Amino acid sequence: MNNPKLATNRGSGYVSNTQLIRYLLLFVLAWAIVQVLAYFETVLVIFIFAAILAFLLNYPVTLVSRFMPRWLAALLVFLLALLVLGGLVATLGIAIFSQAQQLLEQAPQFLESAIAWLENLQIFLRNRNVTVDFTTFETQLREQFLGFLSMSFTMLQNILLNLIDVILIAVVSFFMLLDGKQLWRLVMKLFPPRMRSELTEAIQRNFIGFFWGRLLLSIFLGISTFVVFLLLGVPYALVMAALVSIFDLIPGIGATIGIGLVCAIVLPQGILLSLKVLVVSILLQQVQENFLMPRLMKDSVNINPVVMFFALLIGARVAGLIGVFLSVPVAGVLISLLDIDEMRGEQAEQPSH
Image (cartoon, rainbow, N blue to C red; front, side, top):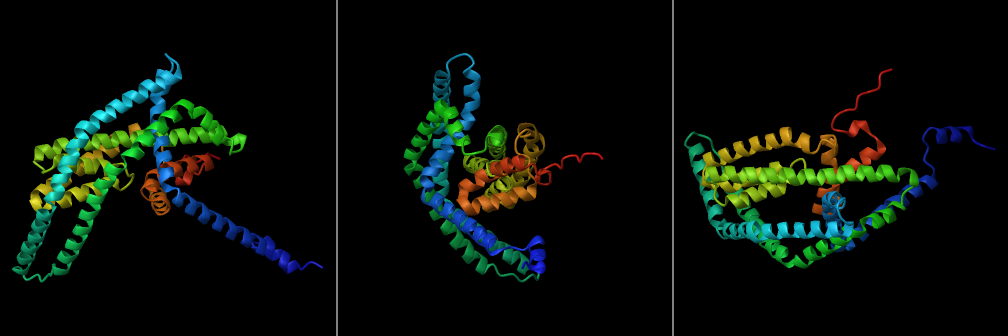
């Protein structure tokens, strides 16, 4: 005989033991997938960056393939891209690396200048009956600085040691350009036929638009800050501009972090210079966000800022730096597929009744 009270509970959101076990198994499966991805991190990094590069080069390859076979168009575009990147590395990259090395060598002097500036500030405040003690802060500053210095040297060494990975990324991306359609059809077979075209459109719009937009915006901010830093007489202007440009690739807070880091490095050179760098960088960032970004990324990612930061935190927790770069376009794809207007940057107009 059925218990009506039990049936009522089940009808009002009661979770049975079978459902609970199913949720636990899904959680365990997700955890296992994350562990497998972490184990194959190096392989995934190579293929993810190769796919991003292939995505970026696919647009010019498609344009050029109207006038010649696709394999020839892919070869020409790929060789041209390698030529441009090689020229940048041989000129701009070596100059940035040289200035970065000089900056790291003079970093202890910057640290001592910063500590001397803090001591002068402490004396200035004490003369005005404001008692402060920066001793603990100075100790933490030394420790953090030494850690940052060690991390910077390790990063430079890793860049030099990962040349093989860069070559593999280039080779894999080239073959993705050649056989991309067949590989994409193979991937799409994992999804129901009714959502394949919609998923392809969402991925193209969010990923290609996002990466091209971020790349162009970062190039603009890097070039403009470099010119301004030269005019202001900022030391190691090329490295400082490169820092701002690289951090600007991170959506949301990247440019702010880069500008703050540059201002902190420049601070021992003088408060006035640091304030000039801060004001000019903020003005350039506002030009980028309010004038260029709506035009470059109007047809790509459209996410509510709160959702974007949530996606960034989840991506950083799951996949580190790669997760940070991929989290926003992935979230954009999910929002497009699920058609959630509340998660978009601009609320969709409600239909009139």
